[in-house]
Image (cartoon, rainbow, N blue to C red; front, top):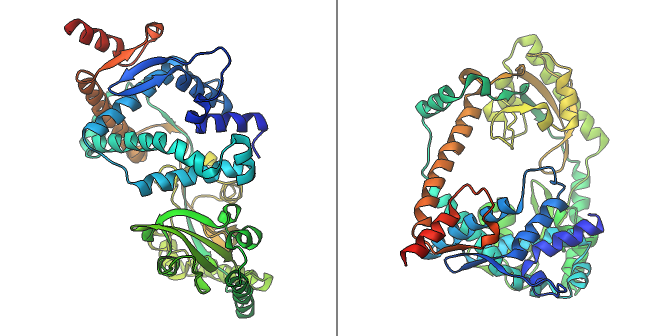
Length: 456
């Protein structure tokens, strides 16, 4: 649970419209900037400052001037999105709103506690915050549109690298490239049937009149259990095929038959459908893995390791032949760093178990089978191969091309964005309160406003 003080601040920020409507003693809110038809209030800036403090970022160089400029930038994007008739669908807004609401319900402890704290129902809170969230998504969509065609060529990357002062080249920490071969233990048939039967009994209780959401909270083994099994609005391609087929075929409050997916056994209920998206709830029961099944997986990988070492089999070929993990078996077993999208990891980017296994290996060595948890939350075993380890060094094109490419792309996108902002500032009505004149803004918000005033 979040500390009470932080939780209150987070809720205050999330429901900014609601907070603005509450009594603030003798403090009177005021408009500090206007961009087109969009207003920025002093309370907007104060709320953002509270969020920075609540998240423990006091040491960052973030001031009210920084926040105001970011809000000016966001309002300019929103203003232009409205001019260009850029839209976000109701389903997009609803999906994002549901996701955020689930987070804050979890922080509060329950829907009831959140409603008690805010003095309003979940439905009322969603309705109040919906317009603000829609503007946030509009700004994001507008920004993506502006930069969507920005690309960098190898020549751009070399040019960016060559222009960097040699004493200013970034230091790249030690990184490793890791490959794996996984084995998921077979599920005992008796356990599978018993799990399916337990779920069928829950389905029978729901059909007989018991509340689906209540039983989901009590019995579901999915993270959505805290929200009564509710998943929020999803399209078919966001769900595994078996789940999507069963869920999207439901009518009204109908409950699906028991179905099986890679995650386990489910029953599903339709909450609401909007076009090609549906808000579904489900109960998931996962068949338990027996110790004897795990031992089989461990022994299997012991044999695979022996085959690789004795027969000099290439690890990438062995991964394709023996691994259970479809995400890595066809790329040589390489693990993908979700943060960077590359196959390299800094030690700080690895979980503790992975780090301690890899730290003991020399380049080219294979670990003994180690237990781990799959992306579906199931126990399995894997052997790990340390393909490469780099030493800390200054960035260079040979070893760090992908990193430099990503940085060069960001720099190019920032330039495109800066040119767009300057161009649109000249065409947009902008006013900023004089109290912010001492700010050292990146863009000439005041000059822009004064020039317009002089030209009237």
